[in-house]
Image 1 (tube, rainbow, N blue to C red):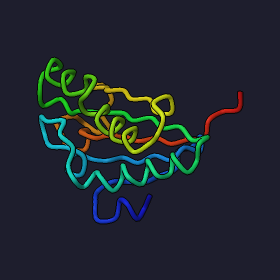
Image 2 (image 1 turned 90 degrees about the horizontal axis):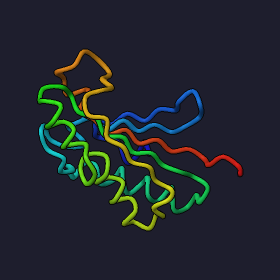
Image 3 (image 1 turned 135 degrees about the vertical axis):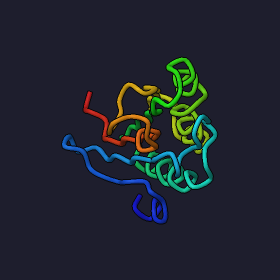
Length: 134
């Protein structure tokens, strides 16, 4: 995943509960006030899809976030189905990953990383983990 994010501002980390977290900021993921994906996001989604196809026990969560420079109504629209979090999810599915292995959700401006009104809060977060045994 580090290779796919090279040259971007995306950050790859491991969470305390052993999940892979890829944080894709607005400049890599999408433009202000838009849910159109930037081309820089394609290699990241391609690598994630490849990982999921090759590791059938892995699951992914895709979360979309906005800042609060717009109203909640606009932000909620950006995070609605087919928008911020959902487009990356659909692109992963289109690369051969089963729908039941991906969860998407949009949070609008409700989960800022820093004081709001900043591009840092406009992001897509991708989490990958191995599924729990039944």
